[in-house]
Length: 207
Image (cartoon, rainbow, N blue to C red; front, side, top):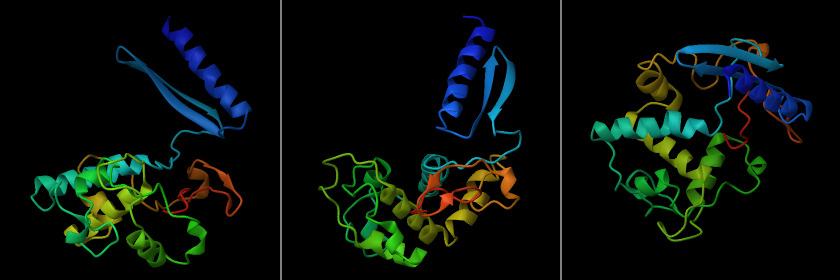
């Protein structure tokens, strides 16, 4: 296929997704042998910010854990109980990273909690469904705990630590938590019963 044919096929797929209201808009770049073209479809515009959603786990939190491991501040064998008391105190950093902690995918009915502190207490009280290492369950709780471990080890809140130690050194000047700006600068994410159109705020209800 030629580059033009590939571009037409990709654009067609995304335009159909927009027509079906699966997404509000799409931006993508097509790069071939050093030459590239940028495309903005639907409501997508140049310069908009995207919610990284669960990519935050690998782009931010996991990168932070590895940096602190390199500094000798964290080990894969460290257990949750080494940092704070929790129902999953025997789970290791390695098991959190690999999603083999046995913890459930998320909290039940997160809307019952009134503050970040209450959410964190609920995470600490959550017991693994399986013994660590027995089953693989993709769990947001694993990385919430890893984020708290980073905060304890670094003495900084997660946002500040990642901005100073990960994003800034990599030149990622437009990546971070709670970015400032007009709402129109952000890509709409989803429509929920509890929040309506989520736009300019993190879409994940637990976050």
